[in-house]
Amino acid sequence: MDIQENIVNKVASSGLVTLNLEEYYHKGERLIYDIKDNLFHGLILREKDFREFIKTHNWSAYANKNVAIICSADAIVPTWAYMLLANRLSVFANEVVFGDLETLEAVLFTKAIAKIDFGIYRDERVVVKGCADIEIPVYAYVEITTELTKVAKSIMYGEPCSTVPIFKRKD
Image 1 (tube, rainbow, N blue to C red):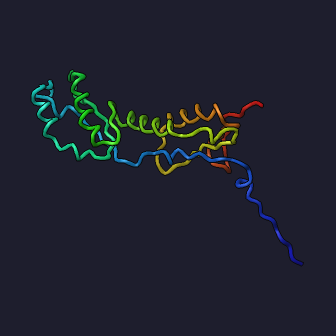
Image 2 (image 1 turned 135 degrees about the vertical axis):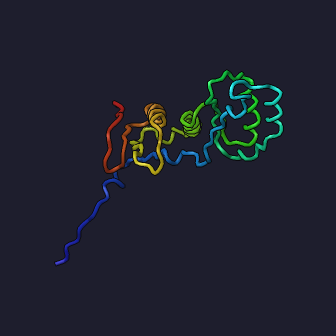
Image 3 (image 1 turned 60 degrees about the horizontal axis):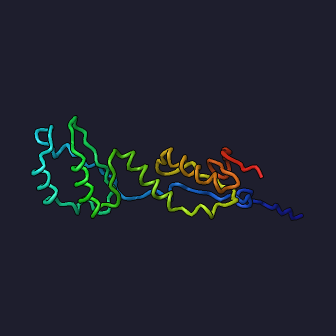
């Protein structure tokens, strides 16, 4: 007697759409530019010296990188100094922000999420993938949830085989 078992992949037939935030991670190198290295005696920024540095420094080393500009010294740095740095870096770098690496990551994810056509998730049951090979910041999950709530039928977090319900539209 031949017993044939039908194995059904319930996840595949569930109609769930998976959104993986890892796909929106910018793979470019992240760097911090600390303006403290340009301070005279670690205290003040001298305009003439700084402008000369801006003019002669090899900025191509920042090509296609993501740069966060900070000042780790307890010094007052004029706004124009950050503007000069941003102006020069923006010619080469992929992204330039004022702030730490966390701020840089937020900007990168915010820009990537802004490019998503959320219309493709209209009336869909969406699972926002929870496990990733890279660390996805919480704010990326918050931002994606805010956008999905406007269009999705439901939102879940985790993996299609094990999800946590987040939102279900009342029809």
